[in-house]
Length: 468
Ligand SMILES: [Zn+2]
Image 1: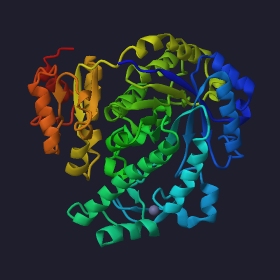
Image 2 (image 1 turned 135 degrees about the horizontal axis):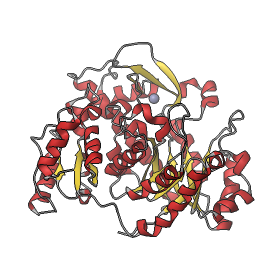
Image 3 (image 1 turned 30 degrees about the vertical axis):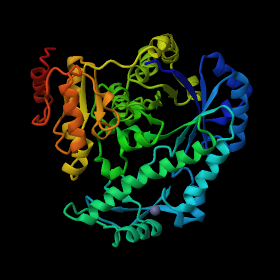
């Protein structure tokens, strides 16, 4: 059960951190890795992002100081200048629910066009030449659907590909009774997983030792704010196709998308939800100390200690604080707390998170049973709230990981309205229960969560014989 705990310094502002002296300081502070943010075009206005040449310099210093390199890259994002010259390479979105409007060309690249893929592979083929490279994060914070009900991609290439495969153009409006609409939904989600799996395979050809993963926006994939078909991201399938899942739980700035309170719980639940997909995979969590003066108290020692421990306490292998340069601006107490958390690393390395119970995350139910609702927010977030109130150690396990990661089950299994389980998944659960498996009760299919925390709490107490 041993794991390697790593702490990476995210490097965002080369004007501050691109020097040998700064990297030596990071080494002296006890970090294990550097995580520079590689951009093709440096933003002269914000000064953010490292050029290729600067990343090469950082890699040399990493080698000199015995640090690893965990490289952070964008794919769809950060190519605005290029897209002004090549608008045909953009992702095109249409509002398919909640209204209508003309197609919108976003300032993100289409992830599926062969030219865009080739361009990114060319970048990755340079990146893999860096000797200290340990990990690559693909396609920062991207998705193919948005909260306003618009989805992509309807560019000429994507439309013609769908038509070639299914004999009809992709529907331009949601129609849950239409077979071709469901084909479109599944085609998008499968395409998303496939394109990142392709990038991983290209890296592995040259550097099988390098871990590859996607960096996802936690408020997009772990907040239960959107039905997964909308954003087009199937977290469990992505976990199966990658070595690492990375996510950025910036709890003090992302809070409008989350229901969990106090706001610190956003980091906790983002890691826990991501971990429910990333069974047998590595997790790299980007905590931050962004805060908005009007909405939160000044960050203190406890906040720093919390940001430095929660990712590991819930199963992450790496925490990458965003960003190292910004630490200079934070209250000293926060930094002290974050650094003191390092004392727990030897203990984290010897264990994995304990869970008394497992709640199966029924993503299939959400996508296929309640596609017109944000059902996860209505029915699933209560479970996290109740577990918090009764103080129960627990975990999620995505239904789609049952077939290949059933060792993610621990203790009694709760299936909140998971009525879209496949035969194979049901058989695995049945076997788990019949073999004992620490299961004190089969509490499954007929359970209905209702909408209230109180109701979920009473159910939990009855089913697990708990009293808070
Ligand atoms: Zn496209």
